[in-house]
Image (tube, rainbow, N blue to C red; front, side, top):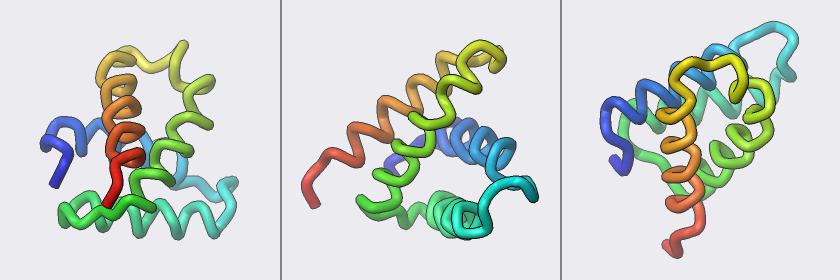
Length: 88
């Protein structure tokens, strides 16, 4: 796995908070479920990192002012972008 346990917990918990809602499109919730499974198994692929980076980037305006541990989320976003940009 490319994330530490702490990074995986921050990332997984944050995405769960925003994406596990009835108001979120079912396709997005399903994609999140698959990402979460890959995250827990340590079996993420480049497409998973790309999806997570795009999702975190999209949600950033919502979490930045209200999440108290923004540095952990920012580090997870930067690491995710780096992993998404690596060649396979």
